[in-house]
Amino acid sequence: MTRYIFRRLVSIIPVVLVVSVIVFTLIRLTPGDPVLVMLGEERTEQAYQEQRAKLGLDQPIPVQYALWLGRALSGDFGRSVRDNSPVLDNILERLPATIELALASLFISLLISIPLGIISAMKPNSKTDAMVSGFSLIGISMPNFLIGVLLILFLAYYLRIFKPDGYVPLVEDVGGNLQRLILPAITLGLAGTALNMRLIRSSMLEALSQDYIRTARSKGLENRAVLIRHALRNALIPVVTAVGIQFGALLEGAVITETIFSWPGIGQLVIKSLNSRDYPVVQGVVLFAAIVFTLVNLAVDISYVYLDPRISYGRKH
Amino acid sequence: MVENIEQLAANPAAQAQAVTRFNRRTRLWRTLRRNPRLLIGGLILIILILLAVTAQWLPLANPERGRGSEAYQSPSANHWLGTDATGRDVLARVIFGARVSLSVGLVAVTIGLVVGGTLGLVAGWRGGWLDALIMRIIDGLLAFPTLLLAISITAALGPRLETVMVAIGIINIPAFTRLARGQTLQIKNREYIEAAKALGLKETRIMLRHVLPNILNPIIVQASLALATAILAEASLSFLGLGAQPPTPTWGADINAGRSWLSKNYWWMVVGPGAGIMLTIYAFNLLGDGIRDLLDPRAKTR
Image (cartoon, rainbow over all chains, first blue to last red; front, side, top):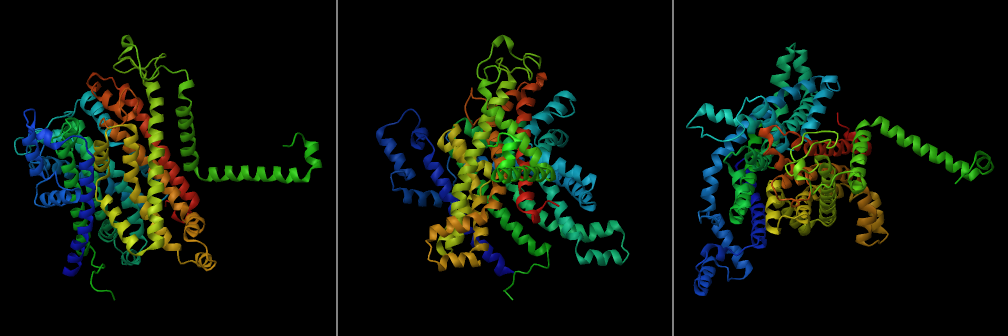
């Protein structure tokens, strides 16, 4: 068990290395001389050379990469061109808003997809099932910015139920925060809903065809108990992986959703930085997201051990 | 060609040909009828592609220049989908926008398929250190949330149509590599491959003539589904202002421009391009599911 966790931890090292090479290459390709930007208008040739040397930009590329990687590993993701603030500070400051949005949309997504998935697995190939699948295919075909825009149109401007944008910190005004949270959370959540629904349906079907379900039924258990206690519990295991993978999708969906609803999270940070050509921030967020994504996947893999006692990670038999 | 029935009666070869033609046609029709997803998805796409290709000959207004006096008009007989903030015809922009979306999708998926497929084929066939190296790179690419990687690539190379194609192409590589590698591993020890080796055929020839054709089916299915996500990605990038630059009509950018007028209830500015995106992606998803049912009946969606 410990050995398995250790092995998985070691296995992310090459992934992080490849990620770092890709991000470093992108930074090098990005137009703009960071030294010029840092020094601003009043610069002398000497100051320019000094700053260049300080950043290590006069070194050969592999050395530059090593320096950059060392800095990144110690938490220095570079500095914003706009106000010279550390990129990591910018990210951490906006992280809570993004996490709140991501959790809320995950909640909405599961709230819709679990019941619908179960219903369509209970009667496969029925009319209800066909309707649910049809709905999910339409859901997959809707980009989340379109969902967001349509929700604003109907719920915020037409029916005037929700506020179209803005953000109030949760600690200041819980009601105001939640009122503004709902639309972006639905927008972000619906994208994964269709996928989750398909997944829950197929893994429920799989679980329902197992012997232990027949045993449970022949014991005379109520249908509801069979469905929930026996089938659903096992069917949810693949869903955990999917939710882990969706965390990445939520991060990228947040880019668009936060932009539409002026939600001050990491996604909005990326787009704002992009528009003001603050590329170090953009690349910093990309690196940060890739690392978080890798760690989340690792956590999902490890959580398997606890979720499914049938999986053993001991030595090969 | 056979001109009339007497000629046909006198010519057994032409008869046989006509029968084959007839059989082929009925077989195609039967396949399509049994597979409604393929039929509907294919039909929608054929119409969309026809509209996109013939856009400049259709009686449409100029999609890039409008009359200021005609701005903000709701749908009417003159402008079926209304006009935007600069008086441009929304319908014309939606149809011309299909060109951008479809061509980005096609080029990007081709890049992903060719590069990713080749990498996967080589990795699976060769194995060893080359396999390990290729797969580590793919793992690295998969570690990025795809849209963020695409944003980062477009930022590095400058927001242009070509950049978007390359960026979406790159994010499509890993799926094709994994698929091609897995398939190659499955068949590389089959007898006919052994036979090809025993005959002393060159490695590239075995890979191209014997391995490739046998791993192609799942790759085709993946390609049609990848087209849907590629078009979705293009729409997202252009929504964020990273796609083809104005005044080029793109669905994503038009929705972004239209959303600032939602508070005035000018819904048609977003509904037109929104319907374009949805219909296209929906059709590709249908087509992908349909092709999967056709090529691999075992994996039929239950």
